[in-house]
Length: 462
Figure 1 (cartoon, rainbow, N blue to C red):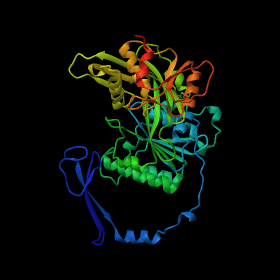
Figure 2 (figure 1 turned 135 degrees about the vertical axis):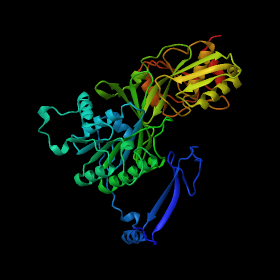
Figure 3 (figure 1 turned 180 degrees about the horizontal axis):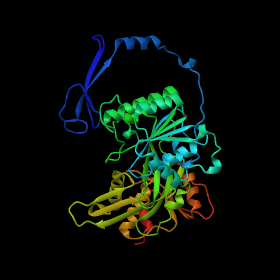
């Protein structure tokens, strides 16, 4: 029973975006959703506060014992690389992506690999046990009869339970090493009086699972849905509470899946992993550059560049199409790179080369569906636009590496040695770089140097 001494705190929370206000609002100022603010009253017993204060003691940093825990390896190199060298014990990880992208498939494959050395509990809140068995047989994750003598504590144990309190109680009682939940949006907690998948349910579920991971030394790996905007469904606080959030995305040309991080407390967020989707599951692709260059053609508007994603160099084909505009306002359709970056490079070319790209429609993309950031592709973008404008290809088997300043000067880029070495493996014979770029001499490699955008026109005959 709530006493008068207990502290009551009343607020209004948007059920769509979790915006919090001290008064009711008809329209949420954050997401512009109408009639979405619901009243939430929370009571904090003063006796509980006094008890917590009595049990809490402050410690100095020097008195904290440092422990180094070995990371959990799944033996799936592409996954372990994106994790930062494996899964950190007691961490809370969220895997999200489009419907049907392969989240459940990847989680089941990971569960199967981890169950060889760890006690793994797999809770499927979306599928029945029969459906899990069918997928496991297709992925060859079911143990054969000759392997039945394996210790039971290292087997993969599954359940279709979706009640959060039951899941937590089982985990606290049996103390598995790893708990996998597919998915968090289908879990429901009795403490949150709303339907599964709502903001209140997701927030309450994540908070309880976070305490389970930290207080009972259990590693949590859950899948999550995304919204139509392509972001993780649920309140934004979800991403702040968990340790890592990873996205599984589809590449547009082949059945390739790209695993990337948007948050990782224990590793880099610029690493990417590549998988191919087959009938028997996701198969990792360590030699992704061979796959990316499989459809490359030497044609006007096509330029090869190389970028560093995490620790690996990627060879990418830039494709540009410029055509005289038939309407009042020229179109700018860009995918794979920042839209403003292509517009900026086009403005630089028009300013210094007097090429009227402002009268042309520009269509630009990166073949393979990969998205990149940074300025190391500036000169590649410029040459792709010029090649399409003049309808002449750049020299065959060449790669472009350089940055362009607002004054039209071409500047060197970092990690040039790694990029050139990777390009050499795939038969690149010409490297187009800045004049001041230092490159180690390699056999059968021709280096063309340019100091400004004025000199780039020399690659195209009049």
